[in-house]
Image 1: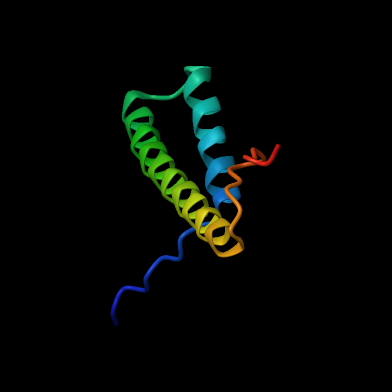
Image 2: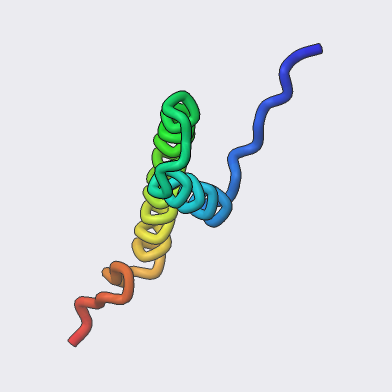
Length: 79
């Protein structure tokens, strides 16, 4: 049976998991092997979050181009 493709978690779920990993690593009660595994998972989550943020930024820019306004995250060139 072919491996089922994993669904990418939402930004919020990834961020929550990343925060829990950081907290666990900061506590210092983790064996080295587990610490390395958590670091690797955290690195993957960070990349996913960065990618999702970039996609959202691009979508916002595209929407702004459609409306003809040059607004960027609450900033406007209108005086």
